[in-house]
Image (cartoon, rainbow, N blue to C red; front, side, top):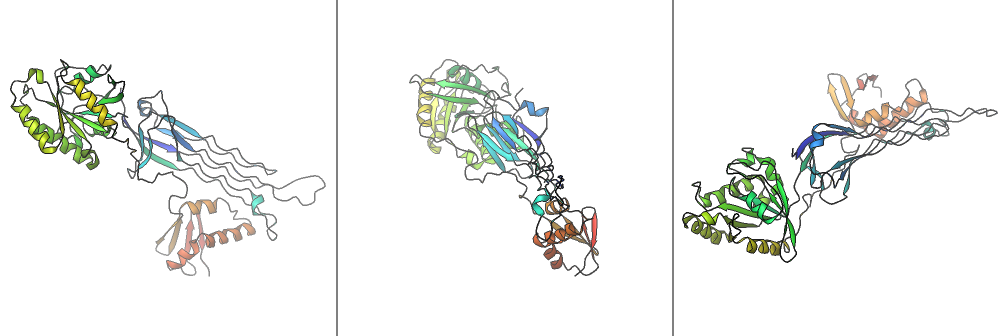
Length: 423
């Protein structure tokens, strides 16, 4: 089974909590705070695996989680960092944010490793909060939660040349002749239901990768037929061989076929529609009359596209076509699908730190800043409460509440805690 599109959920590790501990030593009258820091949560990386060529494993395992960091302990002992998670994918895999559709990474190089999700930071132990006036801090930072994201994995074949055209125009036969690939061939539509790859070697010793893309029909960009799932494989190619049946055996209009396929490319991607093409007039060995070929030659002159006449069965004209393809590929640069786009690494600072909403006379404060503050305070300790008010000021929560018109006696809710506002 060929799987080239999956959605999965990934979660980086949570940071460990900082410890609230104090030195207890013989003959030491007043031991100070010695709580160690929590370990950072594990990151999530994606790595190109040379032995993988499909995303099928992700159909059965949809959730991946990195290891959490360990909590800190006494004697300033740090918690152990969570183990990073490396997820293997085939070369040619595109990672997208499922919510926005934006490309996160393009894993198109051998051995490539990309950091996608950073783990939560470990919390600081109480030893960090000791000051001249606060010598016995009974609070520490809680570890930050890891980030959770739904992402899309798309496998785009890494082929130099793509065979384009309607079903049953002879693409699979052509691939089997010029490469050692063994595609399924039969005289009915949609013989090819999976993309096939083959390596073409010219007589001059040059080589390139050729992909037989399953037949694209009108409406493919909207999912009709085999649909858009195979248009994504054309996106990787540098050159398109547009195979058209000129035999007339199925009563098709070759000119109409050319424009129909190119309209689907344009609907899918303007950039793809402008990709260099060569028209391959196939099945000339069983051509019933020359009208189809003449119309196609006139089209090629009008669109300024090269045209080659071949027969996939007899081999006529194939050598000239292959040599020309090899020559063109020398002049066409390889493209990076993420070129010009800022690469995303999801971190805990990507989202707004906090939000404030008003419900009648109650102000509700939510967000990551709230979780961080509330996880590091002890409401039973006066010094910790003082630290809490300082955090509200430093993060801008107090300023935001004042901006929204909070008044004396109004209630502020943060997580499960409610406080009465006073000036």
